[in-house]
Amino acid sequence: MITWVLVSDAHHARLFAVESRDGAWTLEREFVREAPEQSSLDAGISPAEVQGPSEPHTRPTVDEGRRTPPDDLDSRQFARRTIQRLQQALDQGDFNYLVLVAPPRFLEFLRRHVTGRLAWQLRAIVAEDLTSVVERELREQLLDSVFPDGLD
Image (cartoon, rainbow, N blue to C red):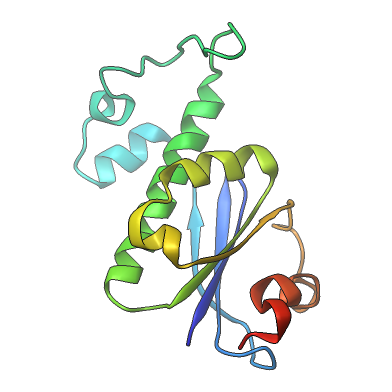
């Protein structure tokens, strides 16, 4: 069984594959957040479609009564696209389980998009910013989250 470990923040993500508790961690993919205009052009989507009619560039938030900063909107878009990529990979059978590792605020954005079968494959969620941690140390810090109670 292959477990993918997504270590991400609002700007970039690393995706590791691991097959067993004692197995090597292999860097499968890296994602980098692009400017909304650039990513929408690359995908053949107009900037208006990226924002969507119900999400103007800044909009009031219900809980805070303030306007959402543009960077938050870009972060939400990056989270949505990252989860879409993971969903496609799961549909293709590229992995069996998923572990999400991200700072609490960005993790909130990621979790909003985890639904259906992908939600069932979620093995663990770690609310920490480990994006700058080197691979060897990541393994040491996350091993018990990736393989809880000795699962392999």
